Image (tube, rainbow, N blue to C red; front, side):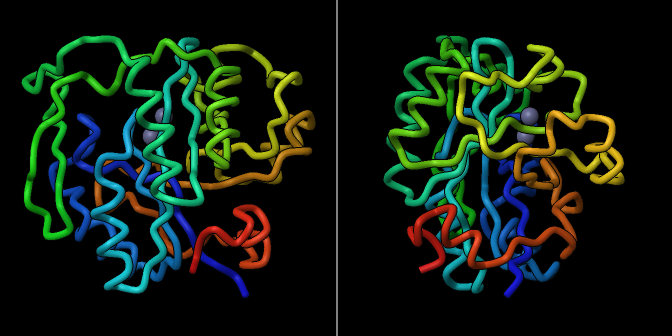
Length: 236
Ligand SMILES: [Zn+2]
Ligand SMILES: [Zn+2]
């Protein structure tokens, strides 16, 4: 059975995420679009994931805990976790490595914590869209310890990606997955020009910051693959 997904969606906790990116709106839109599984993956935090998971249970959409971490090389890594506890453990470590720079809501936007009824329960004062003081290697180890997936995000982009910032995929890390952004119209054509990427399993996500940008029902995984990837820790 195929499972339609979008594993890279920002909520209103990301300063760049639209205020309409509430738990109910995100999961509701995913449901309308016919997605089976999504991940709420904010910048360097999982603060709105529990709320989205609760809504997901009500609406029948699997919400996987996610977080888009910015390493000290300014590389974005999409990370996915088998449980909320694992995600919160990783997020706590990431938060410690986030520089103590205050958010400027007038410049960057508000960073809103929300409950499962979309009430704002607080504001994050530390700016979440900073590079953490965590290398690509340190993050790899952390995600591995947490039992999560380490997915270099939007590798095709000309900024904040492994290829743009490092110029190569680091062979010393056991990376199995990459993400291509929706800018890539033909995955086959893109990979023909970058044969070194063919060994990775590719995720295609929206990186939505606005409701309308959440993926249509186009990207899918075989459900058995997802089970084996997460060792059955999800979709229960
Ligand atoms: Zn990114
Ligand atoms: Zn993103």
